[in-house]
Image 1: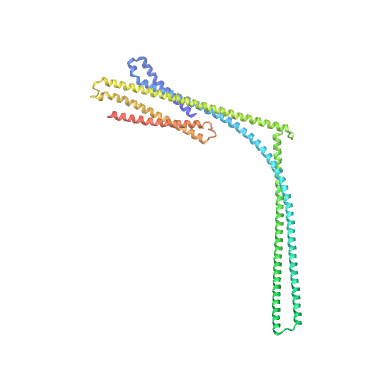
Image 2: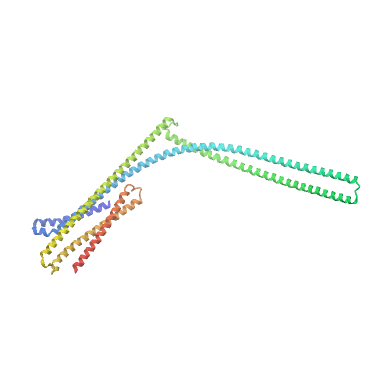
Length: 449
């Protein structure tokens, strides 16, 4: 709106200037002769320049108004589309939330059943483990008792056999009358046997003590492990009972919420019951709403594409018209320059002493060229300033659109094209200004010489 106000103010100012400039010219034309009309040809060119500039500004104002109207229409269409999309998304979210709650309720129910089954299985497994542990401990104790009995039996047998052998040897000693040497030999033999028997007995005693110590340690370790397992199972049972109760309460609460949501969604007559007919009707209505929303979104998208295509075509036509006008203006300027050069050549040809006296003949030409170049330089300055302003404005609009893509989603591409176009125009205007300035300064230096 600020840009439009500036354009309107500039247009009014130029129109007022044009009226002030053209009224004296018209009054003079009515009273002046043909000689005066020829003398005012330069003022007519300036009037044409002003008219051309005014027409250009009018075209820019019309283009700006058209762009503003298009932006307003796009904004309204986008707002309507976003509201419809938001409504559709909210409906989809509610439907999805209700279905998810139902699924969660079913899963919680399955979870409760699985928890009960797990509790039963853990209880049976614990009883089985305790029975197996008890059977294993009984078997170990029985094996230890059997091994101890075998060791005792072997020791008694060894003792009995040693006693029998000793008795037999004593009877043999008493019956026989051995010599001195034989007595010594038997004594040695008896001593060796007694040593072997004592060693075997000591070995058996050590093995018995070692076995008793090992059995005692094994029974203590087994009793400790059984006590620890019993304590752990008791603690796990208590914790599981506590967790199961909290989970059952949470599952019941969520199941109640899911049931209320289900009734709220499908109970159309609010009688507290959901029938198949009501469910079918609600699902059909929701499907119909979704189809309608989808069609509206597609229609809005189609209209947006058509508007975008139309805007691009209008912009292309406007650019073609501008290029054609610029080409026509360049051709007209070239024709005028050619006519001026031709006229200057004819004037120089008519004067025979132009080579000997160049100052009187070439001075007016230099002055005319200097004025023309100065006018071109001023016009190039104005064009450069205008191009820079348009470029800054387009860049600011494009940066704002890039920073807020949600609002400028439709206009972002158009603003980007406008930004690139104004950038090229500003570059071209800068080059033209540099060339015009260089030509004007060169003409002034040449005129001073």
